[in-house]
Length: 532
Image (cartoon, rainbow, N blue to C red; front, side, top):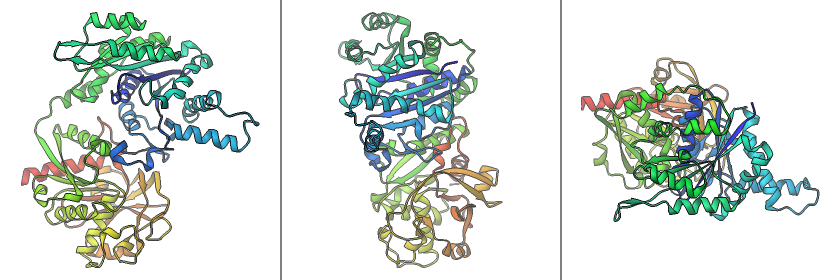
């Protein structure tokens, strides 16, 4: 069969949940036995989000092949349970750079380079790029931004053209809008949706389906009204009121027959849906009993999306134990040690730069001395090694605020960049790398195997010349990259559960299959809470 293309656009306002809608549709179609991939096109000029401030943009999600991508790809992977690649996320920056590079190489034979056809052709080529890695039945493409934004116009023009390239029967346009509720008059207003669709139609795109986001459900009268004014069937006006939980959205959309309508419009067989495991998981989420409290010690705590995958991975582990995971957000620059007495576990996530290092190290000291379960991720491992060397090896002349200074302090030299230098500027290790686990370690118990593969995004490595000193003082080197002999995981000998890793395990956690390290961390926190 020909590959089908579904394009998801958004209107009225941003942050509607286009990504959740796209991911939910992907889950529904996969449950019908179709192979699916999802990609995101972002209209910003940055090449990728790798250099963007997490407080502005949220976390950077890393793919298996080392792509630094938008956080929506995390939702995609968690919903459809498929590993995506760097070709599932393109930005205006990537598109324009590719076109300019082509022009510099003379590939356009002296033609005047223009938005149409050169930019739009590059966008269309990028939409199909993901099929080079893996042939699938259906490609879902989310267009970032809101219809009417000048930045997204080239993308909208490109997806308009695609229906001619692949055939109208192989393309479906899905528009996500907002239907506001006026409390003073107690009514939902459809006019913003009508204007949004009018804007979309003015550039040549007629939506096939409209998903209406709202605070409360739309009645049949409003759905018929939207269908009439927007020239779609009433049944193709999909109700999507606020859900109690994001993982409930696929079930809500299935109740509205979204997958049935999509398959009908694309001329695909109505295969039987199997969402039994997903329904069991959602039922478990709705019947959590009790809670466990985790202290998240970071410096981007003003925007929770900066640690989105970590939050999700903690929640997934909570579902496993039928417990709610309550996160206490602790700004590492303003650490108050009293708040640490309220938590059942401490997590120090990744990060870059100098701010907040001392607060993270002080939190790790508290976890080590008070036997509080600890999980360190990336910088959380580097700070754990520094704290241990400082307080157990007596290397007290190191100043944590000089992490990137390149000075010769012993603790600074514990973490070296990939050129073997304690200086800023080494190339980051990105994507999937192997790690061999030490038998009997906490990490080995969690994974239940001796060789694992995890995703990385960091610059500094532990200097191997200190491994013996650390081990003698009570730090266990429990995970090693066998190809490069690099330390991946450390633990503490005299601690019930203290694990710190170089990689980012949160990226591989799934709502119905929590990551082993997060699962065992929450298990240890529950045990600690019980014995407090």
